View 1 (cartoon, rainbow, N blue to C red):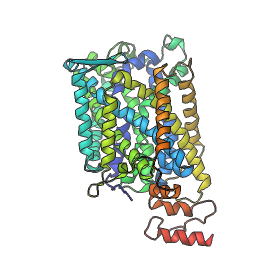
View 2: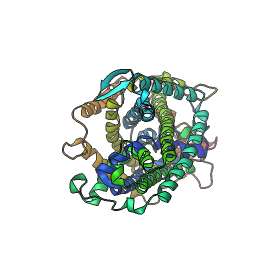
View 3: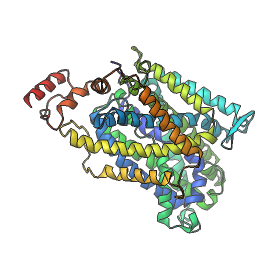
View 4: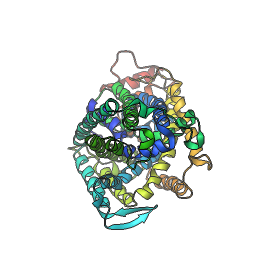
Length: 503
């Protein structure tokens, strides 16, 4: 059975989650956010989005502590429901993260072009109203090959780099925020809301309207669950790290937005081209402007590392249970790296990356719908597992079981406003609707074409590894594992047989 090596330490796992969420586009989109939602709508909308994402993160935390296996929500849905549901969730996640990987192929060059206009030379073609330039595309290809290289010898190297970059991001972020609040003025901050924005909508409406794009920036906290099999961290702590990652990322976004509103009147920032980066420059802090720019560069690298690794693990996990070609589940014995899945991820990322930001923003938009669907399935799996396996060992246990339901309700609401025309937040017609249906259709084709050489039980055992016997012993008709026993030791299978016999 293919197994991944445990090489990611606790701090690196925090960096996987938090830095994997924090990207770069929020820095230069601050102008657009302030113009459409106001400073207040942006700040409070991000806070609300963080709370809602945290509700789902709680469910993922408990499930991850019970099943720290590659695949995250894919594993939970498979165990709670069936193989088909597991495939659906896995395919949705692959779509979400693949879109992000492909987006960064050209997004990196776009960010660099804001300070190096020479990047915007040698135009190749235009898609979605955006021109793709050769230097921009070339930089993306180099970055993709770099991601493949640092993952080729296992997760250890890539996530040590992730930890270093995350710490650098935090330090630079503290400097930016300190200057923003220290040298800025409260007069620039007030009034936080402007009745002339968003058709004169109320402060509450402006904040709620920002939740959908804010959730897009928080996408990725489940990367911790996807990478859990390689975490050299106790299962209960892995669960806590999922929630910690969401809180860190949400707080980081919020304080950067607030500091930007302090350093310069936010109405003036709304008219600039590059948001936070330009705001500090105009306010007379060019060095801090460069510091903000460096956060964006680091954010591209950290998100790229985390998402690239996650896509390969999702592909590996589906192949391990026979729902994708078996070759994609092979692991290098010495390094523990799923090399065929890594190569496949790089090829798909490059294949989609050439479309450029004009077309790939469609992937990000439909990714929001897919994220909402994954939330619903995951919260459903949380409650299903509580009922189906009441005696399952849960190193991290959610205290208030009603909280995850809030995340599922929000997810359902986001699907409604995204798919129904006229809501103001609907997908772009017809391109994004067509792409959404096409992705689901491709998934259906792969499902029916899957080799399925394993029975559902064999697949489940391959998915869970040593956790399979404990699952069988934890059902509604099974006795609980005795308190104080080693539920993960080498004799777990013998205890399972004894418990089944006793029941």
